Length: 275
Image (tube, rainbow, N blue to C red; front, top):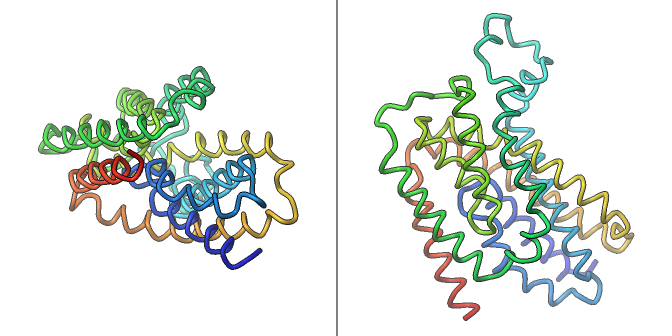
């Protein structure tokens, strides 16, 4: 692996780790850095490039698992720190399944259509702007006093409604985390509770989709490509680990509007670069 290829893998991994779980659209950012592939296309063709993107996404997912490891163990009934009394009030697998269901069904139905027709610069710009508008609306119309200050306060109806908002994230550029956090806030959750629920809910969906994609593209894990993918995976994992923890400490204070403004600026930048 050359120095340039190392830098490409590092940059793409960093971008993925910074943006996958922040409400700013990782797809929008990846469009900007995608041209880096042009300098490595002799070694890494389109199929390998797409496989690499799945690998670095798995790095980000692993970071979420680490951050929420105790919560995940609780969900699976494996945590020794949880008492029987505490278990009665905690987020359960059934509630999580209810939240996952809408986007899971929509993803299965429309996955091929989305890949073939919606992945373009135009649709990403539209998604960035519409997602920003939803986030601004959520901040201005949210209840003054949240009904749910933690994921343990989420009801089945809220879980289903947040899962429905997650369907908006299937549109490239809309941002899965942006749509679900905004939906949770509109439904009366605190920003931190909505973020926690969004991140936990993302683990099975993203891990499942990424796992299937890797199985379908296993032949592209060649000896030449492995170092490239390893660098991207490690970079995405470390950066996502830091950014997720930072974001969760910050979100209740700054809310969603600053991220919405950033998204609009990003949409303008992409427009200038591509049109």
